Every structure is written in C-alpha cells, then in structure tokens.
Length: 66
Image (cartoon, rainbow, N blue to C red; front, side, top):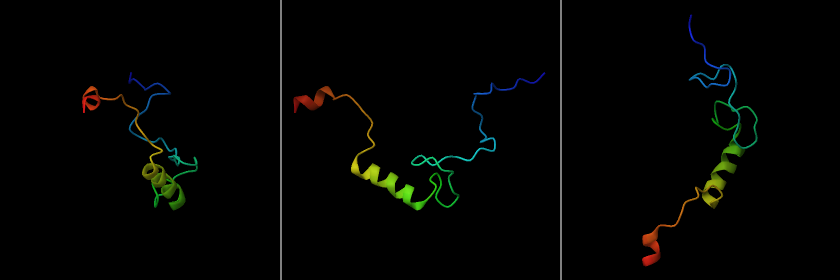
C-alpha cells in the first residue's frame, strides 16, 4: 500500500493552486511572477531599497573594539 503525504505536508507540486502575490494576495500573473502586477513588483522593490526588509542580527564583538 503506497504511503500518501499528510494533508498539510508540502510536496514539490502546487496542486492546482495559484501562487498568491506576496504584497496584496491576488493571484500571481505569469508576466510578473511572483507578483500580480508591475505595481506590486515596484512596491516590493521600494521596500528593499528603503530598508523596510531587514534581517535582525546581533552586534559583532569585534565591531565595538574599533
């Protein structure tokens, strides 16, 4: 008997669901993947360039010594 993945398990396939735009949640379009439009693509780029997206980290001990 084959083992089927649990319902919440992720597989390598999208299973027919359209990917959602990370900015507004609308279905992504092929031309602007992974976004739904050029506008949402530009909003994301602006967030990157303005520093809105940041990965928190701790201060390195050597930086204080300088």
